[in-house]
Image (tube, helix red, strand yellow):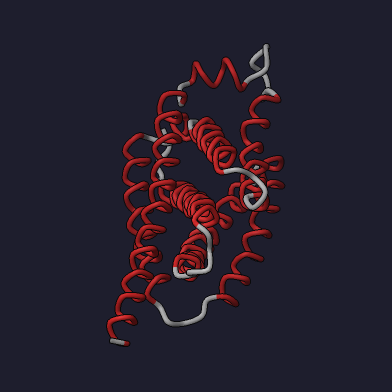
Length: 238
């Protein structure tokens, strides 16, 4: 009798864990789909010139910087404020984030060939999947590892902002190489964290839904940054 109860509880835990990850990946793939369609549609010289260049076409317009940096603000609002925001508001912010990222990602079509973008996307998908599986299945606690990688990421982010203004090609390459290791490592770390969340039976249904959206956002961010890092390293420019 007791064994039946234990088996029933384990089965329930596994089911809610599977449902959680289905939601996580649905949000992630949904965001990738939105961003991909917008990036492909808007990644043309005409669109860039009309919306992201000044009237005299001599400099970048303020709109470009708004589009480039507003996803950062939205991402922080979602991840830090999800407890106090309703699910409908979170979903709206999530869609807005995905759309703005699509506008930003459209610029890669102006720099890299379509073949390079496609091949790098599939390589990124393979690397991401491998690290996600590793993070989910490993018994090693990745907390300290994740904290270290997060500090490196902050350094990379600051260096990347600085390099936007100085345009040092070697620094950009170094950031890209370091980024590959950081984002693959963080993928494993976040997957382990999400596994713990998925198995937390004390969470309410609302909190579980919100955390699945936040988890999908985190994995989306990691995948996109891994993709961009690999593209800067291996992508052939038009």
